[in-house]
Image (cartoon, rainbow, N blue to C red):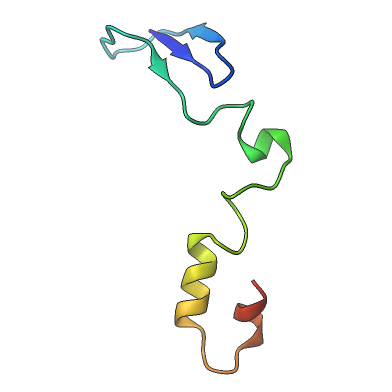
Length: 67
């Protein structure tokens, strides 16, 4: 199976899947914040956790408002 990274590089891997065409990765080591160290839309004030905290915060809870 051939994996195509976001930068166009290809990697040959073994798999039990029978793929007739290359699999394109949306997130890889060149774009994921864990490896790049950059902040992105994956984390921060617009994330699901922040939305949950805003929605279910107790009235007057300032900790949830800060996140």
